[in-house]
Image (cartoon, rainbow, N blue to C red; front, side, top):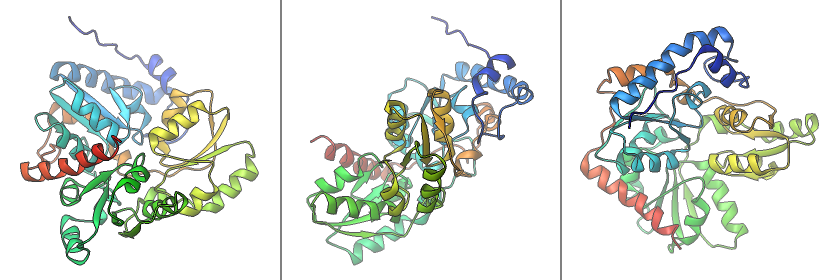
Length: 344
């Protein structure tokens, strides 16, 4: 059966993007901007069909991508499962490199591309495989647990991989009381606090990495927002500092934050995470109001519609994601350990 492409017109695109007031490629999407973007979007839709390609977009990339050409929108873990399950031949992962690598680990036979070459991550780039090899020598009795926001090479050297949604559960269930958690120091501090709350005795060491976008949030910002918007619910990501978590009404992964907002009886929200999530919710939950400031990830925002079109037309070797067999198999074991710990 032939799949019909639903093309955009400037009017349809403007109607779709008009709710967005911050972030994206501009601070707002004017009608003139929509006239400029429409032919690029339609060309991408045609290329996807001809190549049997899907586009995965993280919730932090621009809303002009999420709302138009993306087939799946979510967090790195959820999108990697989408990549694994799709029947497409080509996967374009609009995010940062380590996320595309995770998709390749779970889908080794598929072509995986990333649109931008500015695809680093302050958190993932804070540690290398050689660092972990040295950690093993000095901490021989420790189980090494890595956050999913790490490179394939780092995952390959670790015992267990975790996400922001399951980190507390997995750390609690690991039988070894000695844990080395990396690379996010702020999330690790929150893990230590949570284990104490649960009465779980763990000796946890931490690496000194962080996400620069989440580190910017300070507890004083919450105090200010509560004065200005006393009815607003405050929700943060666990990559924020512990003082921010303590002052927030809810803490969760990007997926959990979305569920919290959609299910809440509240109307106003202050989200302490990358701005793209609020942009997504402005589209998915138009009855909700988002207040306060936000932070941008320069790496996520480096993904653009033009770069997506170009990688579909003529990908470079730098944009192609390859993970050698040995590293892929070792990294897959740490990811499988995560699945095993979340089964019971």
